[in-house]
Length: 130
Length: 130
Image 1 (cartoon, rainbow over the protein chains, first blue to last red):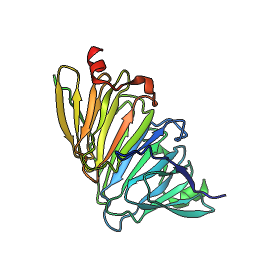
Image 2: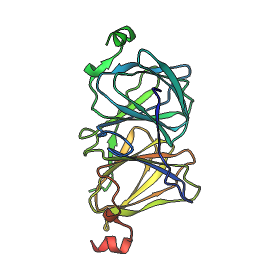
Image 3: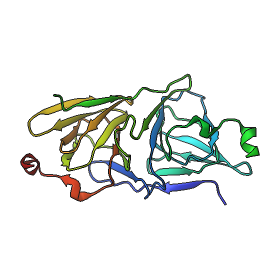
Image 4: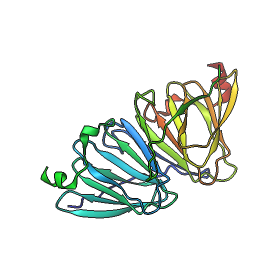
């Protein structure tokens, strides 16, 4: 089974331009407690390198692109996020790394819980033991 | 009293780049039921031109810029949304228009309720009567 669960967000486009809507408990399979966006990522920088014990997230590049790596300790898979209409679901207990940000990348992430440092696993060896 | 309530979103920046986090019931004064983003807006197109009976929203340009006009029937005010760290709170029963989208504008909006066509007032004369 693939670690990569993509979610298609059909754009509500018309002659004016595009609009993508994400609804909690509909296309987004949880309550949206927190929204964050990553931008202005410096050249050569990768981010992530952690897992969450409980948190679930959906990530989408609203502009630009980046490469998401997911790893459950047995499998490691990679996918380009390169469309404002393509999200990825990141389950709990999945190690994630984000590489190859384009200069214009804005990575939008919706999260199922508020920020909680205690929910992070930041050490890969520790992650493998859990 | 100004119609314009800006919310400052301090970036959690470091040597890697920037991250802005929006938390429901903290910097965002409601449950986030719906998230949408507007992009690829065609040149010369304005959007909005409606009010909501109940819905509250927070809007921020995560890249690019646009000009938000708010109108409560007595006052009409305009503000540029031109920073990923500057949001605007749009209360219920406020007419909004969005003008002057830059080509690269991605306008992110967090909403307090799911989509409900019955909550829209799309006619300005009707809005003035309420």
